[in-house]
Image (cartoon, rainbow, N blue to C red; front, side, top):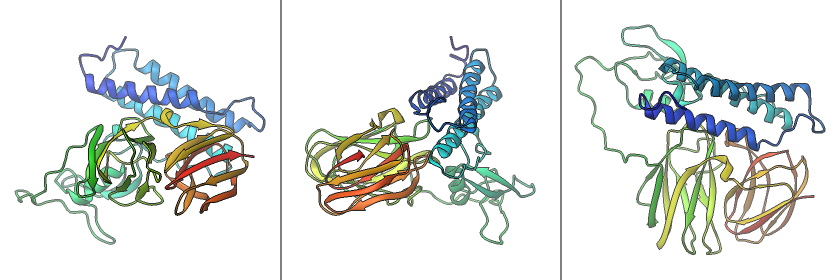
Length: 350
C-alpha cells in the first residue's frame, strides 16, 4: 500500500501523519456548501482544500522521490491555507497572508518570518524560515547557517577553523513528558508532532492544583502562565500549541504528590459544542454554533477570560472576562476558544 516503506520509513510516517491530520481537519470542519450565508468564495476555498487532500493522497500512491515527498507537503500547505481563508471568510476576518514553507526544509512547516541570510561566500538574500530556524540563525551560527544581522548590520559566518563556542547540553524533547510534583526548578521539553496546529493535553491521576509556565516568550499566547485547575479535582486540560515550534519548553508548579502527564495531540481532542459546555480551570473548546450572544458563568476565584484563537491556535482577541458571576458577550463565530480560569465555568449560546 505504501511503496516508500522500508526505503525511507521515517519520511513515510511523517507524510502519513500530515495527510491523516489534514483529512481529520476537513472531516470535522463545520462548513457546509449549502448552509445559509455560504458564498461562492467560501465554496471555492473548500474545493481548494479538498482538491489538495485528494492530490496528496494520489501523490503517495506510487514510488516517489524525496522531491516528490516535499511536493506533498507543499500541496497540504496549500490546502491548509485554503481552510484558513475559509475560516476567515466565515468569521468576517481579513484573509490571512500565505507565507511559503520554510526555506531550509519544507518539513519544518510554514515560515513565520523573513530574514536576511547568505550561504558561505555567497550574497545575502531575504528568505522565509520557520520560527525554529530563525532562532537557530541567531543563536547557532555556522558556515551553512550564518547569524542573522541586527538592524543595519551584515550577515557574517564563523571564520573557518574558529573554535565553536561551548554550549550547554539540552534535554532532548520527548513526545510524552511526565513527572510527579514540581516546584518549577526543572524545564521540560515536549516534542511537537508533525501535524499542526496541535494542543498539549495535560492530565493528572488525582486531585491537583497545577500552574504551568511556558518558556521562550509568549509565541502566540496571551500569557505564559496557565492555571489549569482551581478546585482540587483531577484534571484534563488542553493548551494551544501555536505553529512555529519544533519543541515547547515549560515548567510545572504542583504539589510533590501530584503525578502529571503532558502529550501533544491533534485538534480532535478538543471538545466541541453548539449550545453549552462546562469545565474547570483553563481549557480549549471548539464552538460550532453561529455568531451571536453568549453567556459565561464563573464560580471560581480570581479572573476568568475567554479568548478567541485564530486558525493556527494563536491568540486573537479576548471576547469576555470578569470575576465570579454571569457575563454576557458576543460569539465572533465558529472556531477555537481558550478559557483561562482557576475555577468552575460554563459557556452557552443564547
